[in-house]
Length: 460
Image 1 (cartoon, rainbow, N blue to C red):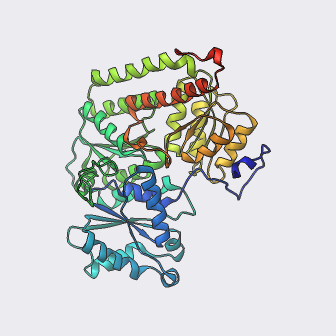
Image 2 (cartoon, rainbow, N blue to C red):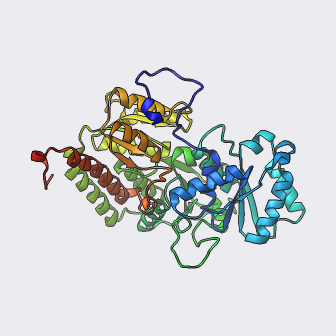
Image 3 (cartoon, rainbow, N blue to C red):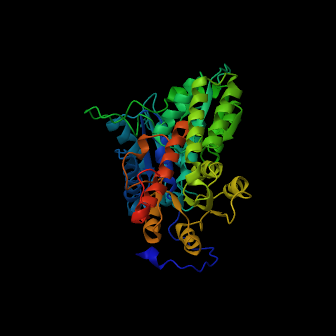
């Protein structure tokens, strides 16, 4: 009902965000931490913050998400949370026996100014951290950045705490993975195997947040990047970051600490971004691209050819995470669709620059905005002034879809009103075919729904 009062008149705003296209930093840090094998994320703040972050991940992935909390009370909020965190570290190792505790801060502990390395050092000195176990941390105040920033900070922490250069370099390639689904990570590993490339993928939430149902309770599923792999990543030949916002800081840290050169690519969503990923892998390894991958690309191109007549010129509005939207925009442009309205709440000037490079001359009427005031309210206003044919984004767009009667393809994070989306990859050539099928399905369903009796066709 609230969105029905969205006005067409657009006024410049600098201090007010309405329905932001982002969420909290700690959610991203928690998701990334789950990509370490045997890891227990820990929220240094109130129980309420931790509950919100866990429930958001659980609602998206339909899996239970474990996490500890420092359970701040009024006293901790005033005098600091050192005692709470030291006690929490002791409890978690004693009761739940993780290999790693990954601590992320919250607004409250950041405002107090808790020094996490100092507190962890105190816990170690007092014997609260067992031999061979690890505590890592990153700072994730939610009043800056977004969940993508939190993800990037935790991925960088994995490098900072674990990666070591032993001086014995090998041919392994580090794939530093941006925020994608567990199934996407599995698909990236499959493509790497087809390219005959030894990789260390981190973080890796496959077989963690999509672990098989065995009938037995497992605190720590078999998936996740091991501490040993993260340590050896410092001896790798090269690093490829997938997603500038999620992985560039970690790739730079790896280069700085261990002398591993790197490149940062878009997440391989769509034809062009997947081409670049495959070509980069072939370039840095010197391996030949196998016929199987060429065949997969050919099937995607054939599918595009079959569908292009229905997609040409369709206007699309997008929102969500920049590392997802950038390659998706490029894919839509490759399909000769018109991604006209694009917003992302994650700050960073690169987003608008990159989108303009991809779509600027090829999409008439392009409107793109990133940062704190790049919200769903603004996008809704744009749509009210000139409608689109399709919406692509997370669940929060369903209200606009309902109010404006526009088809919605759910993609991104979070998706809380559908089940199964995280089980099917949307990266690589095969994943792009799934995106393509979803787009045309939405448009065809709309055609069927609106067709008058005399135009309702069996074959379209």
